[in-house]
Length: 214
Image 1 (cartoon, one colour):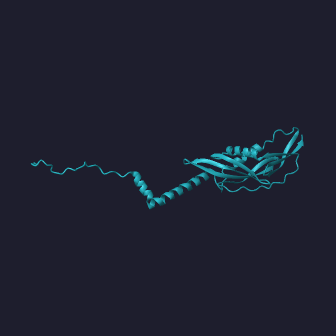
Image 2: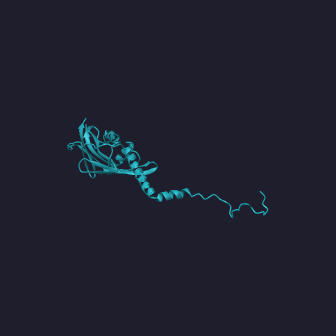
């Protein structure tokens, strides 16, 4: 088509046409988080995630019930009494908790002894779950007793964050009881020693032995 005026048939825009700017994705996310739906769903997801972490941590140990209290006879008269103080008992317990296969990093192990025949072990167990560091406080109550001239221990209660668990109790008992099979070194020779009694005080644990000349 001829254009005698020399003017363009269609008006040219004053500015070049550009595609409309896209709204950043982050703005959409922020807008959704500020919405009523976002304010409801996000806390629910956090709650479910926290519950999942708690359940998974329990699976590390395995749920179980309580142990039964053993009837321990009163210590009889013996020729020898040996004391194990709290520092020694804490060291023994700390080693055996690790050897028993308790998951995570064991720290802050402490031993408290009651007057009679019970010992309470406390500490913290830290581990990583889904990349998140988790720390749980554990409590184990044990009872020392004598069986066939040998000092032994029996777990009465074990919990993690006040939830009863005993996934590692048998292994823990076995490790300590194997060590207790050995008689203390440095005793006078020429005697056969038999463990006859055990008692605990806040200061430590006292083990009584009888000595029979060979």
